[in-house]
Amino acid sequence: MLFDDNSLKRYYTISEVAELFDVSKSLIRFWDTEFDLLKPHKNSKGERRFTRENLEQFQLIYHLVKERGFTLAGAKQEIQQNKDRLREKMDIIRRLRKVRIGMEKLQVEMTAEEEE
Image (cartoon, rainbow, N blue to C red; front, side, top):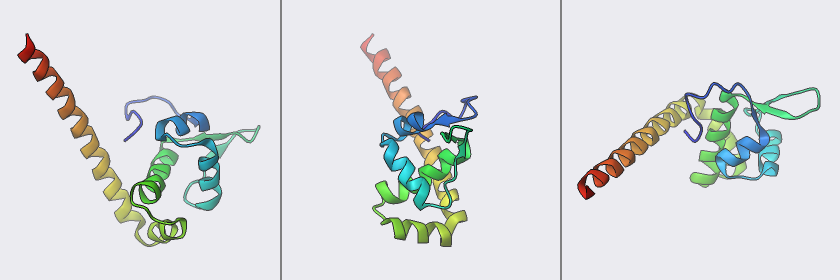
């Protein structure tokens, strides 16, 4: 996942989410209104506060729309019809990304050792 699984942080601001996913805050606000799945908490000022679950929901939407090229209507339909399967798939993708990061670190370490 794009965010640290070991983070003790309970809530993320909209700015932090925008930075994590490299998207604009306005896109996050728009998707918040478009997708019933994504409902971040709002504080007394009306500022959105995203939980880890919200980040996972946002990542699912991001994956469908930005990475797989779904339209918003298509993404909504896909989420509605295949929510459990999509969550399992996203979990697998998250694990594979961790493995990839680990492999890249290992490659850097091995390259550094060879140069010594």
